[in-house]
Amino acid sequence: MSVLQIDHTGFLLDGEPFRLLSGGLHYFRVHPEQWADRLHKARLMGLNTVETYVPWNLHQPRPDRFDLDGPLDLARFLDLAAAEGLYVLLRPGPYICAEWEGGGLPSWLLAEPDIRLRSRDPRFLTAVDAYFTRLFTPLRRHLATRGGPVLAVQVENEYGAYGEDTAYLEHLAATLHRCGVDVPLFTCDQSADLSRGALPDVLATANFGSRAAHHLAVLSAQRPESPLMSTEFWIGWFDRWGGTHVVRDADQAARELDELLATGASVNFYMFHGGTNFGFTNGANDKHTYRPTVTSYDYDAPLDEAGDPTEKFAAFREIIAKYAPVRAEPVPPPAPKLAVGTVRMTDSAPLLDCAEVLGEGVVSDRPLTMERLGQDFGFVLYETVLRDAGPALLEIDQVRDRAQVFLDGQPVGVLERENHEHALAFTVPRTRTRLTVLVENQGRVNYGPGIHDRKGLPGRVLLNGVELTGWTCRPLPLTSLAEVPFAPITATPTGPALYRGTFELTGTADTFLHLDGWTKGNAWINGFALGRYWSRGPQRSLYVPAPVLRTGTNDVVLLELHAALLSRTVSLRETADLGPTEE
Image 1 (cartoon, rainbow, N blue to C red):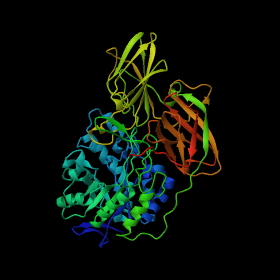
Image 2 (image 1 turned 60 degrees about the horizontal axis):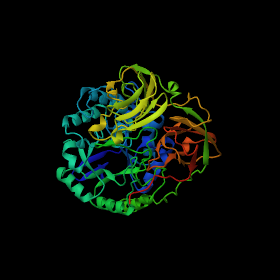
Image 3 (image 1 turned 120 degrees about the vertical axis):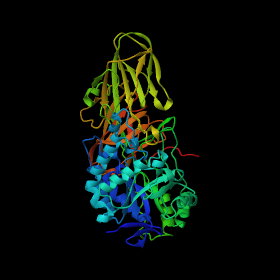
Image 4 (image 1 turned 135 degrees about the vertical axis):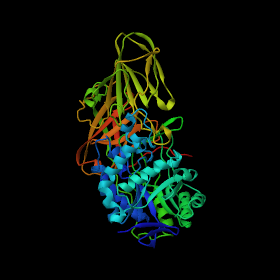
């Protein structure tokens, strides 16, 4: 049993001086069959600890469901870390940010129209208390005080950037203690927010990416009797759709690391290995303009998205070796990659025609949000009947986040939240025309007050100034495509459609799905949701983990939201394309 202690001299482990050399590695962004590989490489770089958030929204997708199995088997991840000789910093939230959908907060909380998240709202605290109880009851054996690898547990996450209710943080700390968490607790904040997000008897740590001596001096001035630590030492960054692929010079990052370690401080790299926002799990930012995050969470980290060591891995390993022992084992070369070549999409199914097999419609006077429909991710299909023909102006109070509009199945326009679009003019061709609005949740906001981000059509819909009523609201979570009635392609559909193709393999390895000529949508291989693609970039390929593939026949499915295809093929290549970088 190894127990972390904190005193004015720094960290002690079993009474001996100890420096945390940690790196972020989110189990939920990595295929579980690859956890052991990533953990081993963390040890090879010289780390003695890994850090992971815990996404509440995945573990508790509904109030009456809790999942700790398969890709969410956190206990197994912790066991693998311990087997590799690594300790763990656990960051269970309830809010995690992490550029993750909704900052990890479950969407069902937002079914309450006036709930206040990250506050002492009794509805929120009751849900949090139940979450912590269900999470830590089976995980207590993994705490260091019981012989496990978890040295410390974080309270909330960068709360000082959001609020200053100390009583809220005290409630969370008390709940963790009631759940049996008896290892040290800690908070983390950017240095300007330290006084707002900290608790008097809880270790406070700082987040920054440069000027380490300055930020640590700010921390030391506020907590002169506490160890110095950066819980998020930013050595890369995330990408957003429509931006560029962000990279940071490895030598510069290594110099910043050297400056930090020279002070005697502990560190957690954010990230050591970023991984992937598989499926629909990316978050978004909204600082007056909504900006969704891309599928890749490569983060320009020491291990790239496919788990291969980068230039930063070698540079950081060299710096760490100045301050702590590093294994003599050589750094492994990049893992083999698979080049399949071109895959032809041979079958299709128009989305609007097969919507009934993908979700059950709910009749409502007004459009219902995703949260009211009990839906986490995906799309909502809204339909009503327009009784009069002629020129029309459609006005939608709130588009959350991208609405494609159809008249009798024919596309007439798109409204995007990102562009602050709310109105669309068209001509209704005949009486009793069917109006269809397909709304995509492009990722709930994960930072700031915008986390109260309800999806679909949260407000009114007007036609020529008159509110439209009598809607059918159909959730399309796309969690299973087994019932989709695919048929051989004879002509390109005029609207959103699912496309399918197959390919044969005699062996498996990581590969990258390239979607040249396709516009926007989602991709699956063998039923595994790879994530979103969008021709606007910067990301131009999707990572395919080797365990997703199989020898023999494999299938690839795309949901393409637009019909303007330059080709009906995709390709699987050995290299990724995350897009152009900043000059």
